[in-house]
Image 1 (spheres, one colour):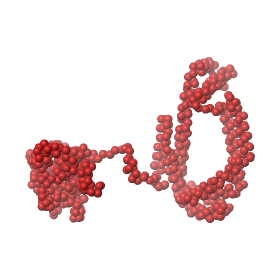
Image 2 (image 1 turned 90 degrees about the vertical axis):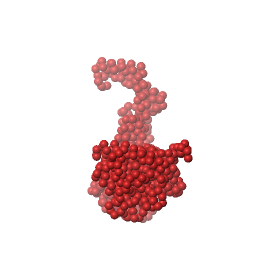
Image 3 (image 1 turned 60 degrees about the vertical axis):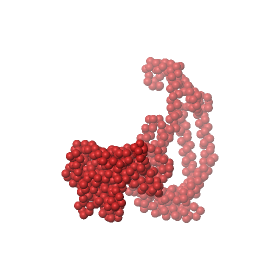
Length: 592
């Protein structure tokens, strides 16, 4: 193959092609450069790991690395470059030796991974890798790791924690080989080219991800095409990395630690792919009673803060219902726990069963009496329940949230109208004719030396009333023209009279309803039964039968009360109040 074709081919290599080059049997190996030192001093010498002391330009180094074979016989002898725990312990021994004598450590990585046989697991493969990791982070000498071929899985991990991690141009570094990844994800090793691309395992990819710190160039055709030239490039890279020797011990250790702390990135606030979201587990609400008071108080305070902030921005748009439902569940749970603690829960369940057995759903006077006694007993002893303080506290939180909800809803409804009214009122006051009359009136008031309406003489009072009525008239017209309909306008005294009359009618109607209930045993019994069902429903898991019974009782009670509301006496009182209000409001400007 001529030089141009070779250059074109090796300039645009795919990730899987670089994997194949990294595995080439003729690539330079560790033993091409150094004399081996043997043994882990624990009874075994792993041929997949070689170590040795050497020098470059007069500087002494501790060299270690993986060793593959160039043919089948050598690969079997070297276990295909896959270290056992003995190999990792050999490396550990030599690293401690280098640390003791102050030799920089240079590691050549070229392994498909740690040997994963039964014997290696029995000897502590994972533990030996972990020991190496811990020791490397504490070595007080510079460490340079160079991936010369493939850096695979735990075999590479055991010797990769360096101050600088360099890679030959066609080397690869991975947690799982492309073939293994393809078999796991796509169920076929034929997808290995796709897996190699997705894994981001090439020298360029790892540099971009800030995993490796530099790329050592290779000749065209790969490192095996010119091993001597490649070795010179490796030598140059090692010597350039020895700037690390200028660092103090603490700085060197910190630099090594920070190198690995910065690896990895994450992003927040990105929308979730709908396809992925489908498979996500829904967040479950904690069971009632498991949410701490501090968390509940925090949610309430956050909601109130949001409402106040939204009020300043003239826009309130939030959901208080979720928090209200959560508090209701908590309070229902506390009531149930209080009933258990007071020994009333079993009585409630028995009473409920007796009511269920009653013929035609009609309760007897004895059952009503039992219900009343239970209710009184619960109310009298509630303060002595162990969770009474928590229950009271949660009830106060519910009250706060409910009030906040009412405020937010009212503010949301009234704010646009209030803004419109204020705008129109300002426009009315800016009218030249009204503005002049008000300024003249202000001058007369100042001249008279009075500060209240009562201190004015009759003439001045009439002028004040005239100006006020003119302002009101113009204001009403401005509102009507902008689409805000004003039904009537009357003084505060009229409002007070109307309120008194309406309250009186409501009181009379309530009394009549109470009298009818007291004089109608059937209606009274239904109300008591409804109370029992509601209390029992809170203290026990709700059932479909219980809910249906509550709905039936509510409907029957509503029908009974509706009969009272349609009585002739109430209709007469209502018509009488309507006539009085019509007479009171007839003083409007147009008589309506």
